[in-house]
Length: 238
Image (tube, rainbow, N blue to C red):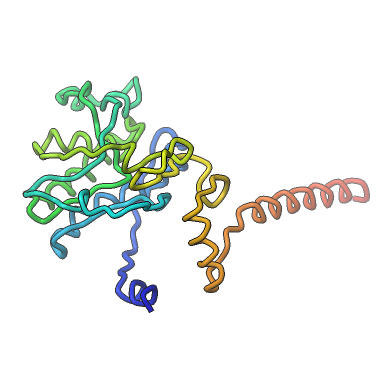
């Protein structure tokens, strides 16, 4: 009944954002869905607090501390990379130079904000506008935009440990709050986590759809071989 209650109280928002980057590999890997994080600002017109989490995570412990938002601050994860590294090295947009690009940016697999944040609607609009304007220069797209929005709007950020709240599975010491399977493979196609595996098994037992990527790849390979054979036979007997 608890699971049904959660599903019944959930809200699904259809999202689309058509944008092209000069490097197709960037957006084909991340997909334009990474920019739906900007919608969290807009949701503050309806909710007191909004918490974002990436989907490729396993929550290991309560997040009470992270979810406690003081005043108009935003809770985010620390980053040991400069904002400059989030752009292509040969970026063309001169407007970017007015920011301190050597400052550390933020990581965005997890963040929390409240409607005490001033001008949240303007922040959301700015994020989309600058993404459109700088798209060809963005290497780590939304992470870069979030990092510069902090400077643009003078946002107060409380930075939490990336190791504690987004630890990569193979580096886990067993004390982390969240395990984050950034990059590839994920929990469902190569990385094993006891909690995730147990939840996945429960999902299947309840009638959930299993992960079938390997079958899809096999089907594509068989289809390719089949079409090649048909082509060879056609040339031989044509």
